[in-house]
Length: 130
Image 1 (cartoon, rainbow, N blue to C red):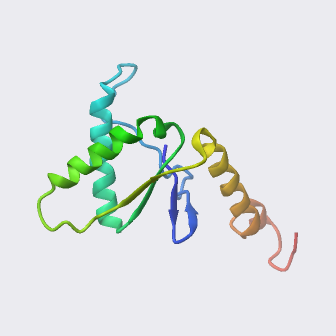
Image 2 (image 1 turned 45 degrees about the horizontal axis):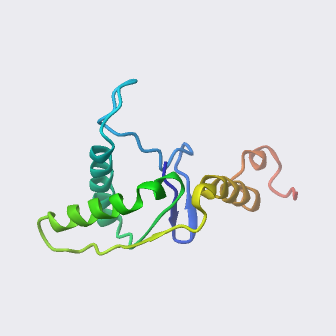
């Protein structure tokens, strides 16, 4: 999975499933070649980065294990992209390592607690305070 921070806010999507990436190369219990999955993912990331004009990409969690290969695939995809080179991402690696998922979950929970976007607030009168 991926974590998205847009305009300094964690983006979790309408169904709290933003960032769930499933390779089209994997079918059922059948596994696919990891290098092909990284190429597919890099291609998707380049398309999304260009469409959304995202310039900072931070690779973290389990993906760090494949970081160098992922960056090479992104660079290769960018080199082979037709048209103007409008996307020049700054790619870095998270310092959280495998704790990225836990930190992301904690950040999402914290964001929910400090905003009125939590389900609990929808059942309270509007003038109630917690």
